[in-house]
Image (cartoon, rainbow, N blue to C red; front, side, top):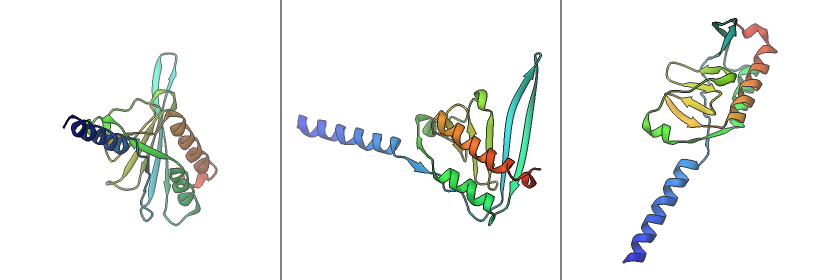
Length: 148
């Protein structure tokens, strides 16, 4: 009986670990326009100002495909914040990047190493966030016509 209980506990623990640490892929919609917003906080002589840069990218464009390709190269995983309803992400030195596909699908990146997808927090890793933000910014700044 003791062995059976131990086996059940081990199986439940392994199933929970697999569930939490299994990598997930971004699955952005391919048929909705994308609005990309970069937010950063500039502080000079104790005066802070938020700087926002917006881009609009239409589906069926090369830029749209490149941004989705960038997202498809990275994965994220669940954390305890995913289940506890945590919605706070610190921006740190990287600022924030928001990808708005519609009112129903939004991805937020911050320097904290977390990503928020539709109001749920997931872990992605700080270096992955930096890579994604840099790559998306590079794709968009190469094509200034998307800037709003």
